[in-house]
Length: 618
Image (cartoon, rainbow, N blue to C red; front, side, top):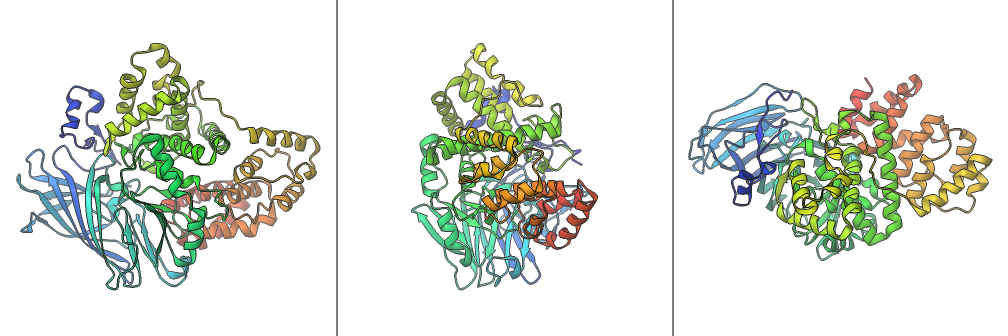
């Protein structure tokens, strides 16, 4: 897999802004081993998508018309394709039919689609259909939705799944604008990562426009029985009718978060910021599709305790959507920056205590992961190497929390004010472009450190980015509220009586901290008493449920078994599924139970989740 090393340009390699690359090696084109495209020869610039969505056959069909730039004046353009049926390809506005060939199937990557063009070709139209089993698409029957009346469809294109429903140059280093026409059953509403309608129409025909250049992994489509309600003038929520009022209550602070983000890193450049609550099978907490974040319903806890995910996906409007990693080996540039920015928003809206608790929990998770992976494991480097592998393997706390810790280290060394000025300049300089780790490090050296060797040695950027493990100069983290819990836990360790926790009320983060710091010798009887006090087993908070259920499996706490089975059957978020299945397979009895649950649960999971779990349960 990925034996072809192909050149992928940082966006607008030929534009005036990118002329600097001739003098600066850090801005040179980079390689993307996860795409067949050859954009140094011919690159896409704009997409006109025209699709019909048939819920009976579960087929998406239509055409993708690409405006291209034939940089080399050659006779071929190469696209990425996987699980697609290509009917024909035409050139330019007169739609002259041309020849095309598909390369050999390669695991994860799919097939290269080679289209013969003329030196003067500016438009390539591909007529195709996407398989009902396309990895990016999940078709849900009415029983799998919240409302139980209508079917639902959603796509998940990150990391390299856009090619399973659109023939495209599927690399984060290639950006394009798009328009779309989508035809759906008249009872359903279609929305995309674009300017969206806010109500159904009688014909079931919807038009979309994304005026800003985006990479293919941010192409997104959702179709269902959806309604919309505004939060404020530029934010709002799409959801199934039975979910909408709960979602609007839960996400009432969205407008405040956008305002907070703008105070820190400048104007929001995408127009509206809306969210859509998807059915439970959505595999992530959120997906930062431009203008329309896709969210899991597991965020609806009833007490707004999990809304930091909104802050995270909103932050992607700057780090990820505005300035994107040029390849998946630089994934930390998306997620490390976004985790840092998320906590800045949380601090501004909810206070330092809340941000500090999240920081400490995140750092603890990072330490556990590095311990599990091994401190010399190359996958603990920020700059990854996922050639020959699914880039989804890089979706770990290394990108998120080690990336965050690196940026916190810089902030501590130079001061928050200077770091904010630098990041504002970084986002503005590279807006709507894709960059590599080397671009960021070059900016850091020339625009912030400015030759200060003492400061550079204090931060040691190369150690953070190119070496495994967790550097010794990691920032100190702490929480006043967690220190109070530490005192209670110390008493618990000495007395092992639940009376220690009488009259104690815990926030979501405090609950997570308590569960993760219970002594190893905590007994099942003691867990039962804690459960009676804090109601962990029956919690409506999915984060708490997941943490408690992992402990319950580990300890053999059977009162939670029914809830564990229900949770695994109804929740599709991979973050919650994997720890539970990993704990189950540690014993023969647990693995047998996991396989029994999985028979009923797997149809409710997206391919992003079940592909990973399939391997685990072999």
